[in-house]
Length: 128
Image 1: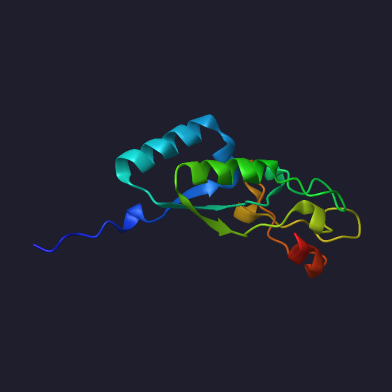
Image 2 (image 1 turned 90 degrees about the horizontal axis):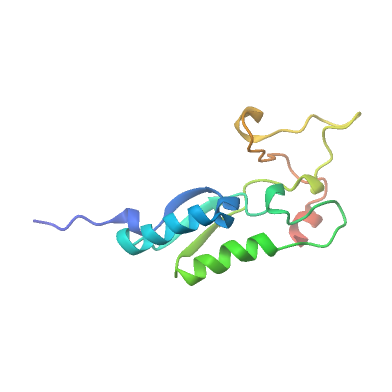
């Protein structure tokens, strides 16, 4: 018969990229690559606040956690699909008196806080 193409080996979803800093996640990904042949991974939140890229407005960028995740993917020869889905809090004015309420993904339920608002200045977002 006709061979069944294994599309799932090309790319799988991960969740938010902070997971890539965890040793248990890394162990499972390595196993999945070795035993199932995964070639790529998609994850959101590479610039989320929990990745600590921009701790406050005007601060220097800190790509330590981003580098840790991407370097590990490179080590495994796994191609990242980088999703620029959520906004760092430092680029948005919200939640203070006279400002709009901060809008988060998943109706602000649970511990994960993906900010879904546009930046105050798209130039700052572009620079990042």
